[in-house]
Image (cartoon, rainbow, N blue to C red; front, side, top):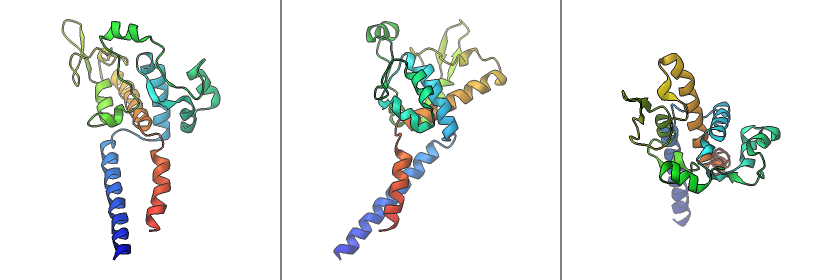
Length: 196
């Protein structure tokens, strides 16, 4: 009886994990999770978003797992150590003065918002220009964050397409950054669960 209870518990745990995994995959279905998309997204996030935001749970050395060469990581981290987390260089006082508050850390943003990476994509592509020339955001009206991709300046679908692709890639990277070891954990867990 005790052995069958343990087997049942292991099976139910495995089934729950598969269900959660399927739900996560469905939520990110329109955001590519290819290594190329995540790599391109890392470039966007480190070159654009890190101006104001940090990713305190991600280290520069983690970027090597994405296929960045040591030289590429060196150019992104500048004078920082490989073991340091991705932190903005902007002083907290300057950030508070500019935005009224500190911009949120992006490390777990894809897990913290309903819709995950789709939320991030929607935020980045939700900027528009009002008739008075001010810029606002459909998803987050009144947001203090500037339109970093200049999406509101795109006049037609041809101008929006590369910005949408850049936003999808940034969302893919932030989804990866929220759990950079998820794929490795899945690879290790599946065989162990199947052998039970």
